[in-house]
Amino acid sequence: MRIVVCIKQVPDTAEVKIDPETNNLVRQGIPSIMNPFDYTALAEALRLKRENGGTITVISMGPEQVKKELKMCLKMGADRAVLLSDRKLGGADTLATGYALAEAIKKIGGDLILCGNEAIDGCTGQVGPMIGEYLNIPAFTYVTGLQMDKNRLKISRKTECSQEVYTCSLPAAACMLKGGEELKEQETDREIEVWNADFLDPGRIGSAGSPTKVAGISVSEREKNFLYVDYRWDLETRMEYIFNGGLSVKETKIQRGSARTLAAKILGEGWVKYDQV
Image 1 (cartoon, helix red, strand yellow):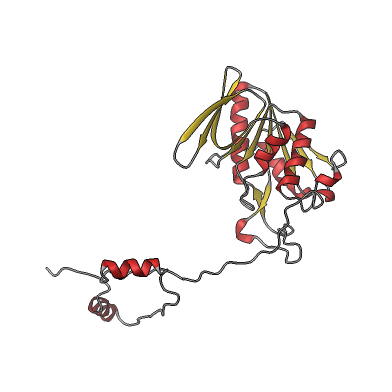
Image 2: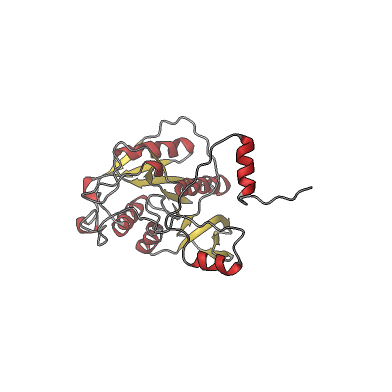
């Protein structure tokens, strides 16, 4: 079985910065990690390989710095790593990304395509299903587990209210939910293959092939800061307060003094209920 795992290098979400001119993520100088959902996809691929045999190829699209994550995949047990890297691919939306990865997977050859269900930097969940559509194979999202059963793939997926199980023949694509796996690394001499975009339709990649444009990015401001419900209010007052959205501005009172003084003030103002014994 030929397994292809799509991985993405994502910026550490605590350090995300946006280019104000292009509205694209700034990746230079920002700490990066492997998308956690893709990490689970790789772990699932390695388990399937142990149980059923086969090969694992990891593929990613991005700049040269993505080699760090691909090398880590090789150390964890992948057999082959391909980096699709070309300036022509810059500015791609999910449609252009799905097309480029699908065409690369056609060159690699794969029976089972695994992706993370979404990437933590965009959270669209679109690329995996698009790859399935471009390859004309069934694609399953929100997948929690995979099993091979008599040359058929058994897929477990999680919905909002149930756990579903499907079976299908290969080839197929599955988009994995994040799990808690920890994979071990060991040294390897396997090299990363770097492909340019010459085999792709230039009108369908990068900014040229991206109908989705980011018009602007801003930080949303909350109109209401918080909800504060006093236990002394009656039910009608509480419900009215909650449905009105709470306080827009609340003055914070800082009390200072000895422990005895503060305790007396807290009890005296009714902040805490107590029973006298």
